[in-house]
Length: 200
Image 1 (spheres, rainbow, N blue to C red):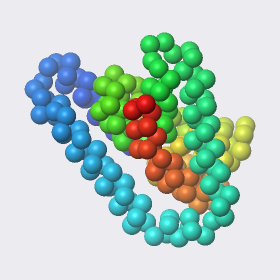
Image 2: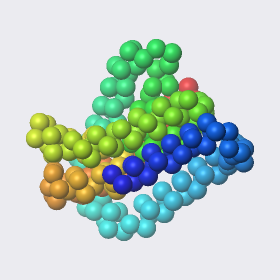
Image 3: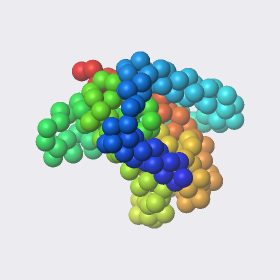
Image 4: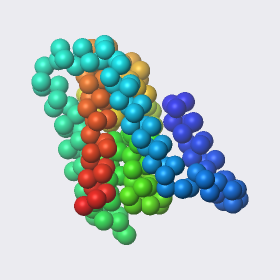
């Protein structure tokens, strides 16, 4: 939750600075955002590759564990497709690009801003932060009303880090390996799916 508040605070700071026309031209140059994106991808690779316990846990799991991230990805894209009919002024591919962030607001919003502009990038960061906050706040109800897998699916890419403690608490420790595997695989899908929907 603290991480989400920090992200929102920096987002609001950016809005305030631009509103009062503070000189931030250097940060608005295209190559700056591009290098920040490269840096994020590098750090994602390090975090996944250096966590040997996670990689071993994934290796020991049955292949059926892949059904959980697959269900999250397909379910999210189907849901976004249905919602896109209610959204005016945006194409289906724009909506799918936003939905393909799966809660990974930092990476997906930079990609979308690069390809589609700041307006859709702002929608992306907002919707992905909301997804994470919903998981953090409503995990006990999701477990009660649906199943222990519900907060994992709702958390999207965040289940390997920020939402993992809340999932462990309410779904149970036995679901932690599934949550981590789910987070890693959904995480890896984000750059590919967001780029795909931004470019078609």
